[in-house]
Image (cartoon, rainbow, N blue to C red; front, top):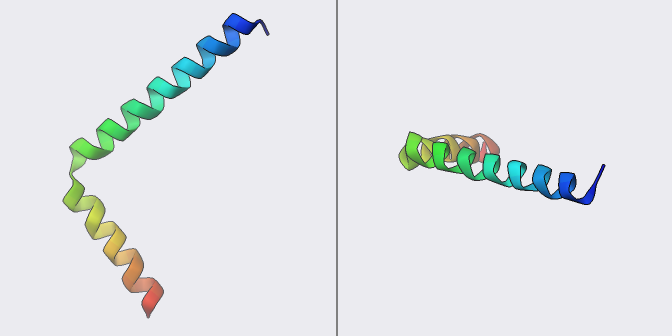
Length: 45
């Protein structure tokens, strides 16, 4: 694999992660907070 190919692959991966984070944020932070709270409640039982 050439150096350019490695850089291109890393950039694509980075863009994909950023897009995934944006989707998670747009779904709604309240929903994420509920899931986190449920997880903490289960751990504390």
